[in-house]
Length: 290
Image (cartoon, rainbow, N blue to C red; front, side, top):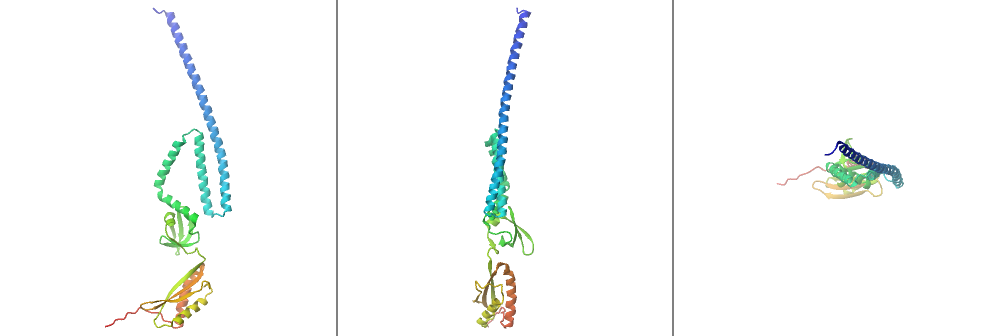
């Protein structure tokens, strides 16, 4: 039989053992917490140091990029786009580096970013195409602000080149938005690219009209207008014997800014000069034989 005294001794020894084990576990837990805290603290300090140094480096790189673009005389619109792109790219790299210093698995983070990028790309595929088109336009400059162009069945003066759209101002003062994606991959006619342009006329007169009389009349009209360039010289020729008329080709070169003024003025002068010299304009004729 176990006496009461023996039972008390067993209970006392058991309690002591439990207290010893509990105390040991607490000490171990505290040591682990301290160790983790020290490691986390080191990671935070390292990440903070990387962030501060990274911000300084980004600022320095942005300054170098800006100075390089300015020295090379890059267009202001392209400068703005490139500086923004470089700044965003460097900040993304800095964020990934800081997260890696904190002990986060960057592989999973990169996979998450890739998934988000794929989803965003699928949702915004049209806008991404326009973004790429805007970059192509800014880099290769098929036209610039102020040029008069024809593209996508539309004519107008370029008012603004945006990242997604190009804005044209039509001759009747309407704003037209053209997506850069289709604009960069389609046909573009730039009427302002060259300093000079050729004005073409096809003039019809009656059969029986003296050819030299018509050509001399055209030469007199060309010589009387100072806006018409001497080099290249104006061109005059009998170009076709049509069904009801004799057709002459009349071509002159002018400065690009004078194109429309010369075009309309010469139409008026040709009409007045031909009437003054009794050079007859033809009417459609149809002969019926029985």
